[in-house]
Length: 424
Image (cartoon, rainbow, N blue to C red):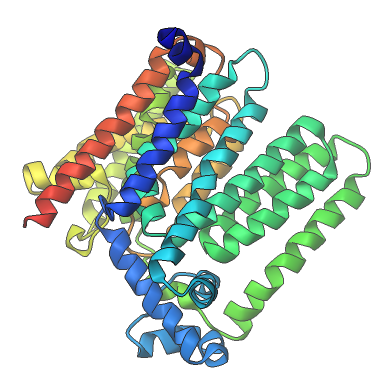
């Protein structure tokens, strides 16, 4: 009887234990990726400036925080949220706990989005299990326990994606409006999410072009986008409060391209295994592609100057420096990593290309962390990327097992690194 009960409700058990693990992590002050606790304390210091003088801090955000030693590229909206919650809840740990519970809702909207994508012939139990993969993400866990704008912004981005998927299923324009609204909220919390507006706008443009009332619908969504974007434009460019450059910007894409590519493909590895690393293999075309990639590698080697002592850089770059004391492993892996990135970009259609370009552009600063792409990349793989993930991913349970094994191993690597850094 107990065996049958577990067999019929294993998905609920996995979900319950996954959520429970986050609460345990909260009470243990889990900080496995090391940075989130410091980021939270820095955000608190910034929110304190709003408490001292709200109007001055808002209208002089970059200068006020820099003068207080709390300069940050985090959106003022996020710090205002913390400021308001501190006013209401008083205790800082209660603020953390409240925000963590909000961030946990990411899994709910990931699950709801999966149900729209895989709405036929797939047992919803497996979709629930898949959505719980978020709780194995080191970045998601640590940045939920020590709330960070990336994960709160991710929630509203996921809600936005959910309404985009509803639009694709039902074709009702109200869902496009809701998509734009929640993407705007995500962008005000985490500005990098605004780039996804390019992808969604393109998708709406293509859809409306094939249907009636093209000009009317495009006018409406364009006007809504402009209306919601105007306060940010006015704040940053008219009032000249360019807080995004705090901490330093970098235009050296000879650093960014190999590092970001390595992070994206790393998180796509379980999907590539499912695809058997075959994304429309074409020997003649792929040979020419490899030659171009090898040529680009020579430029990257000559101009690459990322300093991992400033933190960030991705797991492959860190593994290379830890094992070999240099960047050679990243350079060796680069041709294969870039090959798969390009193949994903043009797989079946060019819609993926827009998403890949967004992922490459969404980190303007020097420091490049996994938290910017984890768990965002795996969420995109199952929702808006066209990778032809089909019923067999769930039918053949080994693929879910591979996905879970990958994230467990990834978590374990972070845990080992945490122990090393803590005892250094």
